[in-house]
Image: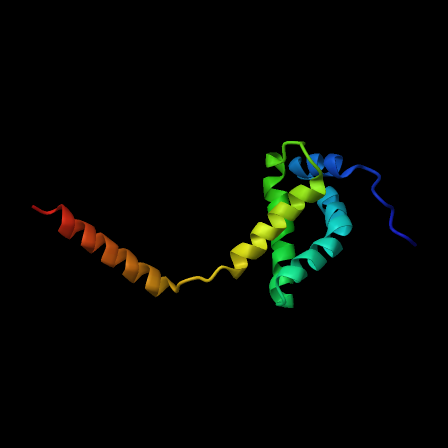
Length: 116
């Protein structure tokens, strides 16, 4: 038995997602996951990172649906969320120890400069 297709527009689905309709999110995922995966894969050859970015993208769609202002295509908005998610994953990160030690050095340096 074939699954019933949701006939709502992407804009209507995103409005329903804003109202916490999981079925609407599922339909947006069904419509957009494949092309989003392909486009992100053009920018990153790490298949695992792309898959995680796609999943994270739709979690963000769930959480940020209220921010969509209705201008432009929903697919373009999803693309924007997706590419920023992927770029964030790809950005080199310092280890926690490196970040803490550089923060400590900056704080110590500031204190030395402010003393008279």
